Every structure is written in C-alpha cells, then in structure tokens.
Image: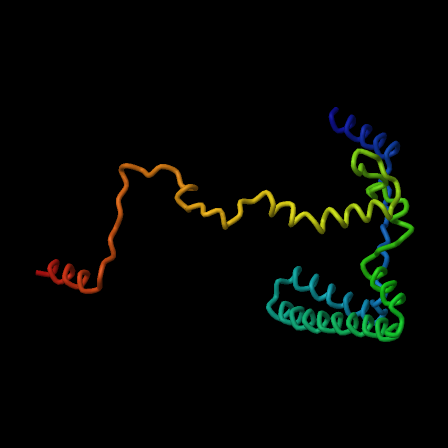
Length: 192
C-alpha cells in the first residue's frame, strides 16, 4: 500500500516540479588559452584517476603533472599581463584602465551599485555633490589621527605609571634574584 502511494506521489511530484539542469557559465579569464584548458583538464582527469584507484603510481603521476600545470599557469598568466602592460607603457590612462579591468572596476557597475554612497550629512546639511563628499571624506580621514591624538593624554604631563595601577594585593609575594652559586649550593646540600 505504501509503495503504491509513494510511486504515485513521486510521479506527481516529478511531473509538477521537474528537475531542471542549469549551467552557469563563468566568464573565462582572458589569459587562459585553449592549450592551457587541455592541460588543466588532463590534470583533473589524473586527479580523478588517483582518487578512484588510490594507487601510489597514480598519486605520483598526478603530483608531478599538478606541479607542471601550476608552473605553466603561472607563466602564461605572467606573460599575458606583461604583454598588456608593456603595450600600454606610454599611456597612464590605458595602464589604469587595464588595472581597473584586472580588478573588475567597471564604471557602469558603480553607477548602478546600490551600495554606492549617494549622499552624506556635512555640518547638519545633506550633500549630494560627489566632489564635496569626496573632499569631506578626504578631510575626515586625513585629520582623524590628529583628532585622536588630542584626546589621548600627553606623555609630558608627568604622570607616573603608578597612577594607572590598581591597589596592591596584600597576600602576594616577591622573589629576589637568585645567583648561580646559590642554586649550586642548594643542589649540593640536597645530595648529602
């Protein structure tokens, strides 16, 4: 009876809520070449082979190929960025454009970014002007050290360190310095 119900329920569920596969395509990094993809796929297949077999030979083969692939990836990536920056060496604007692309700073994205600061309160008034907001932030962060320093006690006020300590504990003890000869004598007296 239960099996009939379960089969009926499963078929209805699958009919109303079919499993849909979606593939999320990642934007491939520009420095990854088709040859590099083949090498990385080969490395992944060696890893799968080792995981399934747990053979020492497969592990060694995978480890060697993994080091080779990592070295090659590093070299290809380095050469790609060297080529980009060397081709734009005479234009600061192009260099900064490349850096922004490298770290994904897209101006269009920032115009529509909900986390972007669109207004701040300066001296009790709301400001929407980006240059005025930037100037205020700059002033605040440039002067924050001096403002904090004013609030901290000056070391020249002749305060003693004892002013910052609490009352001493009455049942405490202090050890005086011990010399090497005292230790040596105690050890010799113990042996007798």
